[in-house]
Length: 547
Image (tube, helix red, strand yellow):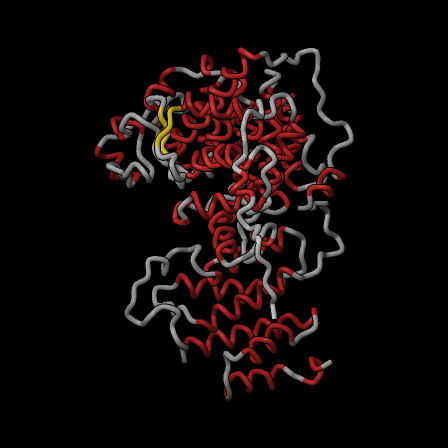
């Protein structure tokens, strides 16, 4: 009722004459207007921000102190509040009136003379609550639950089933499929790794100058003339833990988040058993994985877990990246340990995905896990894609996006035409779209469809689209490697790896890909004994009164 007593001019005067950044001012600014008075609310919020620039309050970090997280875009929620607005809008929430103020706060964080103030953060947190609780618009078109039981209800009625083409997974073939999957993932990641963040037009121009378009091999520093290095601002001599060119490797595949989580999830199932739960995943992250190697949704979920949140709150609180590709890159191992069983693979993937993602972010991991499980038992790429679609809500944005590119392929659209169409629909210069699951899943599916069953064509297709090249090529490489086995992957892709993979996972700093394969097979056979000491880590004999 109190909202009706206040007028815009009164609140602006309150902000100007009194404590403009107090909880009361922020509360009034965020909650004052009725939904149809959003213009007033925006003007009030921006007035707060203007006043804070004139009279900055206490810095979060000391005036002269340079903190390593200060310019880290994932360090403070103020750096990502506008991304959260984009996410809320995508979910169909009534947040149009909050766009301008979210943009203003995020711009202040990135400005050269920005002031990282406590009051900026307070306003951003108030906005987060407004967006998180905003009602869905009445014309919302999609059905996208994040609860597993609800996801099951929304799957297609005609689920994927084995056809006469289905190949029985014999004991002797298991290792070939899994070894091919591990190898294909690592090689695909290495192809895309140094090409990440290149824009499509520039990337295609560079690749054509090196006579590598369509892409049929790794990119090497030997491909570049001095003129090309200057023209494209190419960096060489890159540290191995960054984005090295293929001839800069040192006989093994270097650390990358796109392979870290595959190793981590293998260890999760070895220690906690196949029936691990989301709490086990978070325990593994906090104890076995350095925070600094986590990106986007995983970094926010990690931070939330440190602060005491449990899943699924770790995925949703102040996490605008919850529908990005981060969960998808963790998927394949759940397919490898469930050969020919997409449903079981997707269920295991859900238990992992829900700690950091919601909605289509979760479906991305379930979709890939199901496809990999199917690739263990069929060589038909269309069947593999249908197996993935059978495990996610049919009326979700992700399922409809995949269906749309399958329809394009069936209509005879070429790969180049598909590339042009994708870039007309999704802006690679907008990082929210660049890393979002929707355009990147389209790239994965189109790369598979246009591969002709060939590993080189599949991962080559993938990086030509640009966007998140290493993540997408790793996923495509894993699917194709699983389908074809190691014999289907040319030595030009495998030789630079030396059969070795580095990671930042605790006690897993260097592994042979063959050993990782053998360990995966033990999980597949459920030939493991969970560490009950860790499973009981929070069970105490004593009881305490809360007082």
